[in-house]
Amino acid sequence: MRVRDEHKEQQIRNEAIKMIVKHGFDGLSMQKLAKAAKVSPATIYIYFKDREDLIQQVAVQEVDKMISATFVGFKPDMSFPKGLKIQWENRMKYWTNHPLEAQFMEQIRHSPLGMEVFKKVKREFSIIMGEFVHNAIKNKEVVKVPIEVYWAIAFSPLYQLIKYHNDGRGVHLNHFTLDDKTLQQTLKLVLKALKP
Image 1 (cartoon, one colour):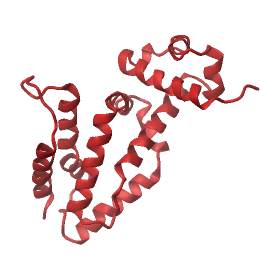
Image 2 (cartoon, one colour):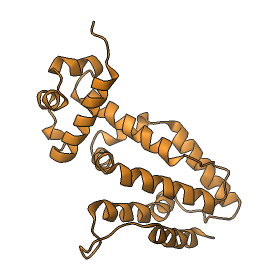
Image 3 (tube, rainbow, N blue to C red):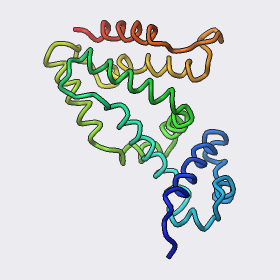
């Protein structure tokens, strides 16, 4: 049995992300991936059972990284404005520093594999986020609305601005860079919208 090499495994994961972002799921073949990662096709099967297992493992790892980055310096018992500000700053930093991974996760989210991947990610994320929102509702910092409405108001504006930033252009195809001033202005409007 061949020994696992963490460097090779990560190289395979990185190249898989690049291929999926550039060519979609159908563009990912084990032969092409092996060539891009500079390994033999047999090496890929040391780490992954098959193509679907590879995609799922890569997706779970990336979602876990994003979740860990989101919670740096965050505690669910923080005031809602402070906690949301930290999450926004963490999410902005992660998504703007990892645009390829962001595109990959969007593709996963809108694919048939998306549900399987998100079932496998840490339950801890749901527990922490749930506790944070329930505390905010109890403390009368946030209006009680369905989770989809909350999520759309609390995070969709941020993610749209990040998309503009990563594309380098805004609504009218003009140059756009997400700076701290724009981030804070948008966050202020979101906090106002969610206030009871």
